[in-house]
Image (cartoon, rainbow, N blue to C red; front, side, top):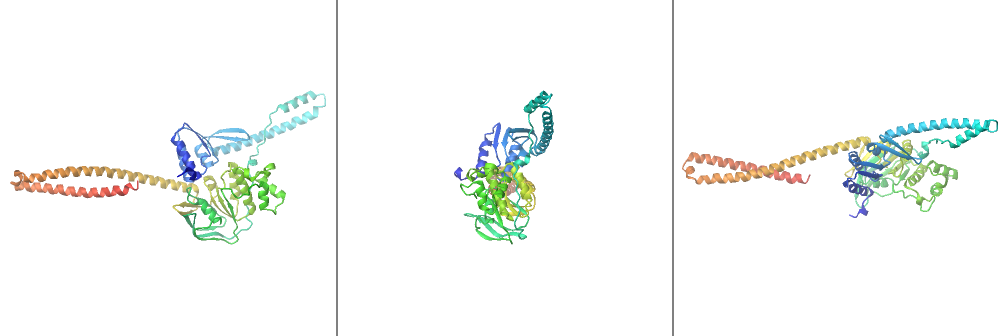
Length: 465
């Protein structure tokens, strides 16, 4: 198969195989979890936790950072901050660091104001030299900046126009796919629930969302929207833009009833400020395209949001802002994500795809992963036990084959003794000889039956290993 036909996840896995087989002393990883499904991320974490070398990586996957890294370096306002410890601990450390810096800022501002008053008071009098010295001091003073962490977060508020019915979306034997069926779904989606859909790459998660959003026809089955349900769809491909339009026009053309001030205010809430609003949508970065898509989704005010990988391309402050906004959403949400932290924060229900079927649970993603690990461990132990039994049977087969050869030779020798005068002239010795021959024949028969069973077991078990 040509590598260009592979999915993003498959290409990422291939790159890892090539990299890890070389066993370098230092691993440099740039967003290693992008395009990977949850099972593969869990495998990668397990591998990297035991990696004997040094790992330097960039990632916006908070759980991945927390489990792998013991040193955090964050670049913020052109400065690098180094912290020894887990990522979750760094968050607490950074909050304290910001508080301390802002306290120092306030103290310095008060001191600056005091000195400026003194300068103003004495610059024209007999103590003008004192005032000039203080002016020079202020000129040389290294100013402390006030830190506003919220400036990097966009501000979203998803509010449905209509409440809608209690039963939001009903599917019955809904089969989705393109050339062939990928999966089938029978489920009733309820109001004010947040459903995460998880599964390995290629199992049909995005195809299912496209079908539920009426962007793709089902292969068979039924789908019915509830009373007054309006659907908003976020496409991970971010293709829902008009080529050549500016950011401002892209939003305004879709929502012409809003005035210029309202449009600019919304754009500013999503960090499109100043000249940014006149940028062409064609040159936007991945994160900017996500924010622009979220603006349009928010302004629609739908009560059913169907989101396909909404955190892709977002930095950590962006993910946190989106989590906060969606956690306050009073409608229904159906989403696909490989970000375990995002799922843990938002999902009330999980639909996980396995072998073409969808299973529903209200367990957390952490509990599902733990259950899966336990199943994998049990399967590994079962396979290990099976392999050990298989080797035991193989060894027994060799032993039985050897015994049969020896017994056949022994049987032949005993049969030849029937023609020995010492035996055929002595009926007691002949009776004893015949009994011995019978014992050997019976033993051979038993071993042949055992060998037949062993051959059958080995033939069947070989296909399972």
